Length: 97
Image (cartoon, rainbow, N blue to C red; front, top):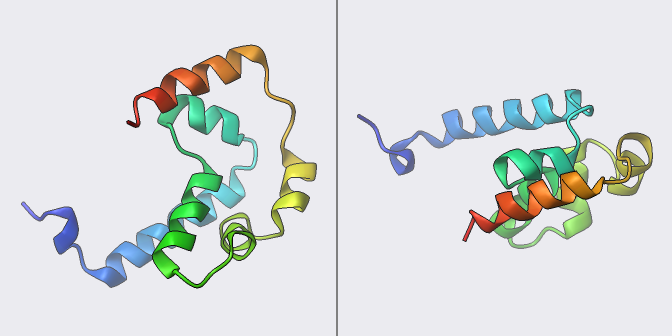
């Protein structure tokens, strides 16, 4: 069995790009819901891109993940979180530690 660190960088990059394209397409899957289910969202992914690059700004990384400026995506696709969504997110994120 191959381990994650042994995965070819080109394969990993292709999978990453497919994930980002999928998240761009599925704008109906709000970040709050992703956080509530998986403990990460598009913002987390863009933070990881920023950290991995080392020279990119948060806004640049978010534009890569969102396919547009974050403020525009937020205005077009993000609603207000309900108390239930916020509680699910809190419980889910607590598992990340």
